[in-house]
Length: 102
Image 1: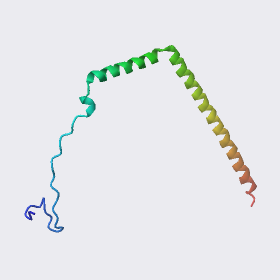
Image 2: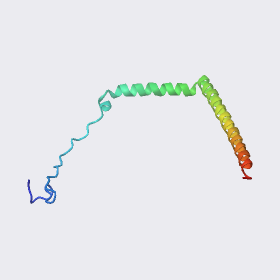
Image 3: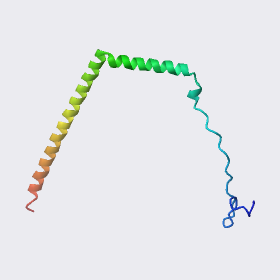
Image 4: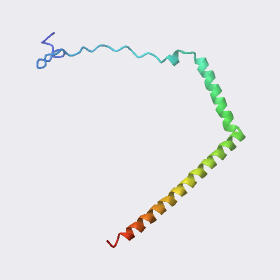
């Protein structure tokens, strides 16, 4: 313990500060060590599949039909929610009018 060096010794608390060590340099992720040709081929295949699906008319029609059904369902649920809210407001007004004279 070196009492003359304030970096390692604090006179009030009497403890020795930890010595900083150098961290090892971060290593490259393991995927970068793998064969890059394999990654390129897989990316090429995935891109070709996506391009095929996006240009396929049947796929586009299916996605469009599914989207329309989903949007219709959402609109129906929103309308139902509005009706419930209006009913609740009407009931609240009714109960307020019953107890208004008290």
